[in-house]
Amino acid sequence: MHYRQLGSTDLKVSRICFGCWQLSPAWWGEVPVEPWAAAVKAARDCGVNFIDTADAYGDGLAETELGKLFKREGGREDFVLATKFYWNFSSGPARYPDTTRDYIIRACEASLRRLQTDHIDLYQIHAWDPITRPDEVAAAFQQLRREGKVRWFGVSNLNPEQMELYRAHWDVSSLQPPYSLLARDIEQRELPYCLRHNIGVLNYSSLHRGLLGGKYTTDTTFADHRAKAPLFQGAGLKIILAAVEEAKAIAAEQGLTMAQLAVRWVLTNPAITSAIVGVKKPEHITGIVKAADGTLPQELWHRLAARFRQAQTEALAAGR
Ligand SMILES: NC(=O)c1ccc[n+]([C@@H]2O[C@H](COP(=O)([O-])OP(=O)(O)OC[C@H]3O[C@@H](n4cnc5c(N)ncnc54)[C@H](OP(=O)(O)O)[C@@H]3O)[C@@H](O)[C@H]2O)c1
Image 1 (cartoon, rainbow, N blue to C red):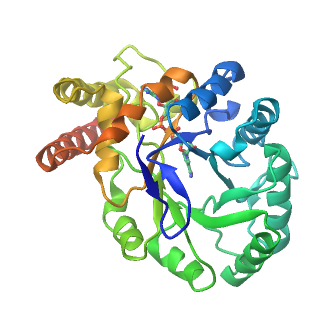
Image 2: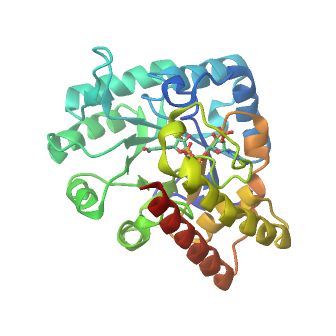
């Protein structure tokens, strides 16, 4: 496994990060916990030292299961532990964004309790909150750092202007945006901004929620949130899978699986510190770590980018 410094922090993280969103029944259905817990241990055995979760994943379920695992088997200190706050779900299903000072302190203490740990290594704001002042967020962060509850702070799903507003009040150590062969918007503004300001990037949906994993066929149907996503059905799915079939042949020439090729494509971008992969079972993580062993040749990176851009344009047009 290869490791990189996360922005200007002292955190040295593996280039693959273990993503915990899959423990969200409302999005992914019931994912059995035993294989998932075995996957966390398999990740550690492969050298993956970075875990990304959020309080909102399963309304606390992902953090709770991680905490139970750490309590039962130890190993908390083997990982750089990143979690998020933003959705106030304390008053029932009508959740709403909340980054007020009092809420941040309460959310952090609840995450620490669920995770059964005394500190969070990277605490991220899940998305932009338009109605709380950045200096109020900063006041909460100063308190949490002073109390030793959080080491570093990051953001997710923010644009450069939003990061700039926060950076006037506190150190933004990382950004968590979507990035894959089928989601490249951040190449224009967010990634150059992060390079310029030495902000670490842990990107999500590296496999485009599995679509780039090489496992699906035109007969695959999705029983989870993907059932309604445009690229996951009908003519759109067929077009994307044709590009995936071509890429599989390229992957084989490189000695990689399709999933490894897709993640290596992400990691070839120098702005990306670590690629998050969403995991349900040990094979998901053991099957991906090889992606981190190198980068793709420049010509091949661009060839894949162009092929998937064409496929995506055609797939979206077909779905209209
Ligand atoms: N900050 C945010 O707003 C945000 C949003 C989304 C995600 N995230 C984070 O990023 C993580 C990953 O993102 P994601 O879940 O959207 O997408 P992803 O990593 O692109 O896709 C995950 C899916 O890919 C498939 N897969 C996993 N490993 C594989 C392998 N080795 N070979 C083939 N297929 C494989 C599985 O599909 P099947 O389920 O079909 O087996 C899995 O559910 C999440 O867990 C979460 O931590 C953050």
